[in-house]
Length: 181
Image (cartoon, rainbow, N blue to C red; front, top):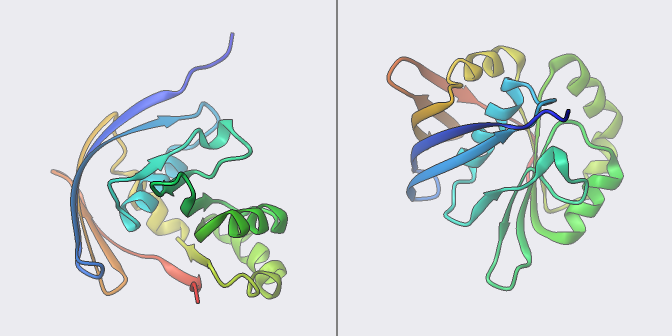
C-alpha cells in the first residue's frame, strides 16, 4: 500500500521590509512520505523569502518536471522557479531557460559544500540564478517550528529572516553563494 502525504497547515504573516511586501496567507504543505521535516520547513522558508500571493507549492518530489515552488505570471510563464537540494547542472540549466529567475536553496553542510566546489564555476554562467545555503544548525532550529498546524510571523530585513510563533523565536541568515545578476 502506498503511503500518503502528511498535510501541514500554516497561517503566515510576512513583513518583507527589503521588498516593501506585506502579506497574510494560509498555506497548505503536503509532506511527501520520503521528505524530512527539515526539508519541508526549508520549503516553507523559501516561500517566506519570496512571499507573493501567486507563489505556489507544486507537486515537488512527485514531479520531475516541476520545481518545489513557482510563481506563474498571467500568461502562465514562470517568473520564479524555486528548487531545493543539490540538483545536477542539467536541471538547473532547464530551470534557468524556462524561468525569469531561479532560486536554489541548498542544505546538508558536508554534501552541499562538496557540491558547491564541484559546480561553482559552471553555475556562474547562469545570470538569473541565486543560490542560498542554510547551515545544519539553523535548519535544525527551523524544524522546531514544524507542527501540523502552524501560525508564524516572519520579518525580513537586511538579509535576515526573523521567524516566530507562540513558543519559538529564530533569526535566520541564509548565506548567498550566488546572486542573480
